[in-house]
Amino acid sequence: MSLTTEERQNLLFDLSQMGSSGRAEGERSDTFKRTYLPVPEHVRAFDPSVALVLGARGAGKSELFRAAVKENLLPAIIRTTPEARNLRISEKAEWLTGHPLEKDFPDAAGLRRFYDSQSSKADAERDLWFAYLVRTVRSHLRESSIQESEMLKLPGAEIEKIVGAFRSLESKPLLALDDLDRRLEEEDGWVLVSYDELDVIGAYDWGSMIASIRGLVSFWASYARRWTRIRPKIFLRTDLFRRHGQSLGADLIKLTANRAEINWSGRNLYAMLIKRIANASERFGGLLPPKQSEL
Image (cartoon, rainbow, N blue to C red):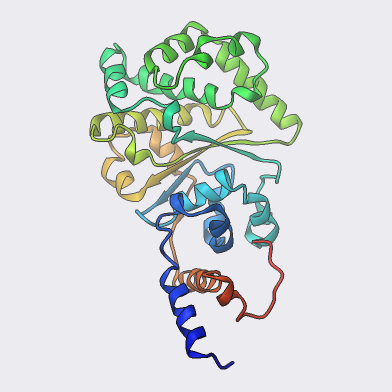
């Protein structure tokens, strides 16, 4: 195919703009859906039995998170990726965001005040995530005492009041989640709660970040075996895992036994590059032979 000088310049300009969207979080939805590449080795991260997903900075943890949670691409991934068809999960799975919650979560100062005010740090770290999990799945709960609780009505930044309201309900939140898990099993449904960007919790306060991650790991190490259809997906940077694994306690070992790691082979990197080039613009797409694709 011969190109004019103008056509060649237009294609080079499109190519120069290929990475202008930056990180996965900032890419437009329509662009993301065209350029996202489902890598077979990464598909295991979607398995319900995998609670912990590790990857280096920039490896694509947030891209996986966005594909499943924000863009709802898992049904298409299951249909088009042979490795995904062996997963126990159905296309009816619902992905919810446990973190980041933006304005529905306390800031660094609020977290520090909360931890400083608690007599039992370990209980505080776990109760925080239990309370916010209930808030995350609120639309699925039937218990009226939960729905009418201040725990759900308070602004997300009011962490001390939210955890206080959670504790005042005693065993009711646990029973409500037990009931939800039972209903999901009967209906062959799933609720997967994803936690991403954990390295920004607490912002400048390193102690709050470690305490929060430790609480999240401890909470799910305790309840991942209790609930079979309410499942966590904890996306954690590999360097944090290696550097602070000991600080996160023995509970981390329970979650790491069955984990997924985001690595890229040379073949997959080239495949992603080709797909991004092909979708850099309509002009590039027009150079390729037509092909039906769902993803």
